[in-house]
Length: 269
Image 1 (cartoon, rainbow, N blue to C red):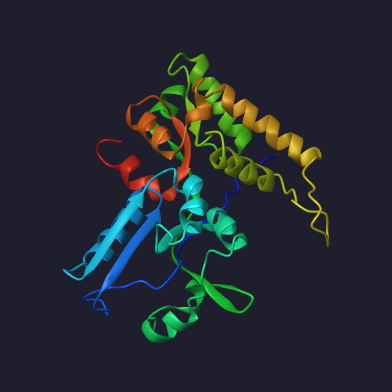
Image 2 (cartoon, rainbow, N blue to C red):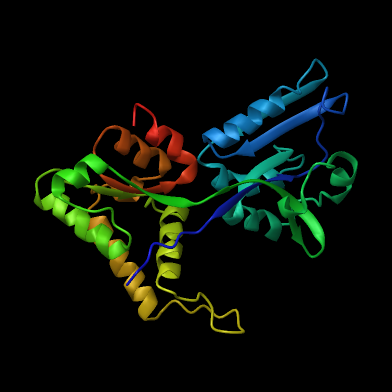
């Protein structure tokens, strides 16, 4: 049985060089932030912009394309951004290219309130500061489940059965959605699905991949069954598209990040 085991992603701030905060401690300079476009990061950046003054500028580029542009933008000399807001998956290319500076000196000077659990440490050096954690959740339309005579599913097999029952009852043509856009979104879904089967990504004691096995096949077959219950354009569905489809009333069961809950559960959702 394939249980719904999800991967949590930490969001963290990394610095590419010295930053400057006017009324926040430093008198002059420029801060330019690269990050993803969603509510929690927008709030963080809004707080940073309150530090701007006549001698300090604070700018940002919050975009869903941040992963695709970050390495080139930060490799430039001078770098286009002084800091980046990253996730577990997007910090790795920056570390591989040597684009992240250690933060230990800045923490010693300004970080008295930073907890040890927030410090992302690599080889004894703090390379990022975590400010939030995110995890995927299963969202359901209770009214649609009730109309179909269904209980809330607790395994993927039950999700597939519930989606098929909703479809067969003529309540919705495409009752399920997940973040299955080509790229890291779809990759994340496979990671979650594979770990849900109990699979291990590497052979014990080695760095040799180990996904070409029964668990890997089960994960792919489960994703295919879920895709069959999804919009035919499922390979374009990121968090924004999935959330919009939910708020439009087009789906009854969705797998989304917890950070999207406020938009999903408000009076418009």
